[in-house]
Amino acid sequence: MARGSREPEKAPNHERWLITYSDLITLLMIFFIMMYTISNVNSKKFAQLSASLSDALVGNNSGYFVGEAPGPVQIEGKVNQAGKAAEQKAMTDAKQKIEGMLKEKGVSGKVEVSVEERGLVVSLKETLLFDRGSAQINPASREIIKKIGEVLLKMPNAIRVEGHTCNLPIKTAQFPSNWELSTNRATNVLRYLVDEVKFPPQKLSATGYGEFRPLAPNTTEDNRQKNRRVDIVVLRTIYGSVEPTTIEQ
Image (tube, rainbow, N blue to C red; front, side):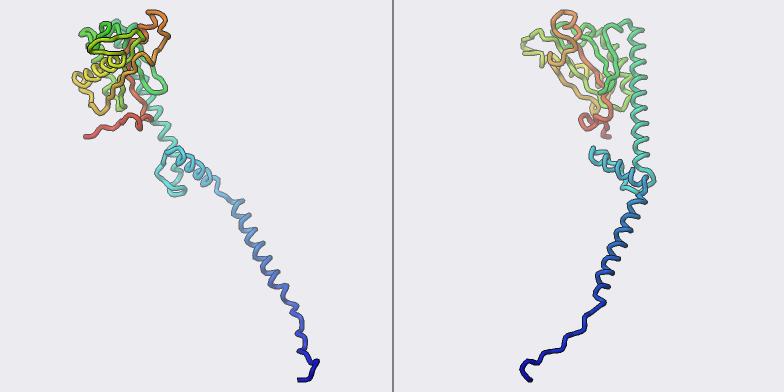
């Protein structure tokens, strides 16, 4: 080959721009498809998604996946609201029945009945149930407890019996402190409900708070009398994780 000879130059490719153009068209098509999809979001499905995520975060599983059934979240919400309303009515009705019975027995001033956030609370004063420093239920008050229990027995809710005292110290062989006195009083009321009213034991629990949950400052004898009490608390079903509400057969 002669020195200085070289290969002939190739003709330029004038169609390379088509590759870039096709890439651009593809990207534009994808972009518009995405925009179209976003602009046509099903508002109902979006609401279901939002509510489902909210339920999942607070631990309320509706039992459906989004879009699995028509309006599961809305239906679940209506069922929950209906259940809460029914429970509220049941507690209000029970309150009225108990108050009517207490009025007939002439002991309205010794028992207070209220519907609170945690449930229905029947508060029995010490002067009705016990002698000072004793945990034995007075015979005269047993009929009152039985009548109250017969109303509450019809409710499916869990029930907690709470014993309370004032801050006057006690130190006996049986009750070294107010803890023992309050707990023993609550347990005796619970046992009466089981033995005489035939409450399923699974529905009941007892606890003693001593002088540490007062209704009023322990500065006067009137206030101390308010604090010496036994509360029968019908718990709302939302507290089922704390107190079981189902009865094993």
